[in-house]
Image (tube, rainbow, N blue to C red; front, side, top):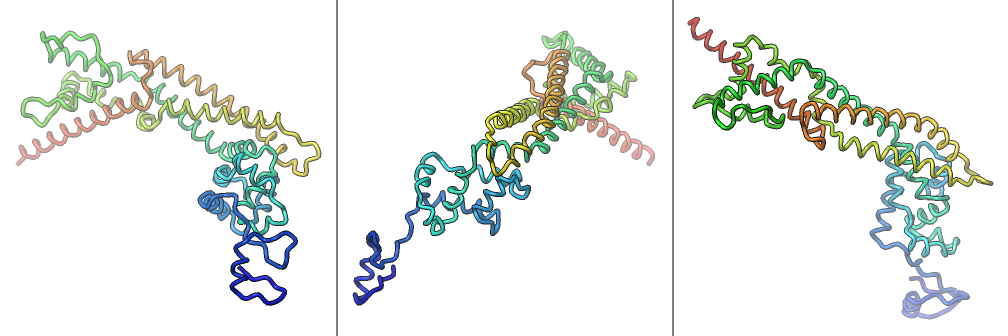
Length: 353
């Protein structure tokens, strides 16, 4: 602390006085450091957010937000600013601050006080974040919808797959003969992977190798390349329709939030009409795009449901699992056939010697 002016008093008295509240009316004793409203951790987190914006002051930052400055309203910046929204307790504590003491306060409290001047702050940050991330979010949804729709159509229209599954069933029934496992009417696609696990007596070859040999023997070798009917399987095996459902909900909910924000907007006498102009223009285009994405999503769900029914799979089967088990089977078939080809080449080479 600093000792008061005006005359004598030793340094000890000055030190003692520094720790006491400053008497009103001055007496020449300097004001003590301002008591902080935010705890240290909260102040640090807000300060970290402020550091994203370089040397911009809290007031300049808020002005940028009000003017919807493109350098301020990036998706990442808005996500960070949403963490800084003052709680109701912080608002109560900060609203009575004497403006003349604001400069002596830390940057974190200065930012929160500045943010409190933004009308409907949380709503504005949420809708601007939706605006800033809309294109990226929509593109990801369109890509997933296209991949899943294409794969669904390919599997449903495949001529090879039903023939191959029929051949597998006939072969399995032949092998199982009169055992209780024989005479089966069908099997689940999820059991296809077992063909690569079951080995013939002491042979390195599996049932899948035997199946390839049988297909060649019965002049149906083209069914080994069943994957040529379904080139999108690999990409579809990484997409989840359940996740797409969630992403679509977020997209629609965000648009509704924008609509609500525009209804709530009171621009009478406003100094900053930029937010309203931006969001009205954005909403017009976004509404059409969300409607188109919703239609494509509904069509996908219907065609996928029909595909599951065609292959007698449970209606709850997620696309990721469904397409992945088919894709893994296609790859395993190709690998088994490649093993047989290599074995034949080795035998021919040996015989030539």
